[in-house]
Image (cartoon, rainbow, N blue to C red; front, side, top):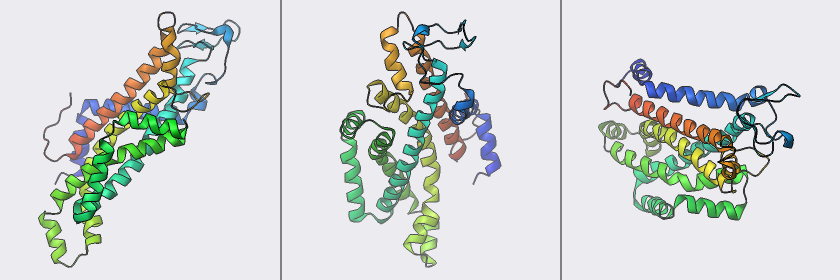
Length: 290
């Protein structure tokens, strides 16, 4: 058993994990303090200042467009800051709800087996048989693009990953000596399942969730790029990429900076997941980072 202090030391020695934590903390801070940090309204249009390059200073107001303006004169930096809200609001609740549903069904399937296991795993197989992005596009197209519908779609399409992972862990844990000892002492199935088995599932699901956050951010951007994400005028990183695709030669900054925001945030979540895996996995030793 690894002490919590030793786990923390292993995490802080993992340099990429620390970088990932800093990136995710920065994105979360930008999302929470968007009104105070953003230099302009993300939806304010100034057609006379359209397609201005990074660092442009408005001679009338003296304001600097640090990342330039888009084809409608909107400040790109402000839109990126506000767009971080959408990415986090979609990814974090989606991962939390998917993990809760998948963990519950995986626990029941792995522990009880029988018809419950057959029903859950066949549902997982059926869900995974469809390409994720195609299924998401179909559901969003039917339900309509909105923040709530995107979260619902992602929850529906991602819970099988958690259910399958949980079931595999439970199958290994239910044969362990501590479970047999609890049963011999008269503990009921409910107590054994939630008191002794479920805690062993938390660590692998935590690591999986950190990687899934990155995937949800990328998928939300993909839907926004295709016009099936959060509808305008709400700024999203995917819709900003779509706006900039027609101006790649003359105004490259419109697409470049939101693309960098997606890349850095997804990388930060993956780096953090690597650190959590190395911290929580007792089989790994002498983790020094990369």
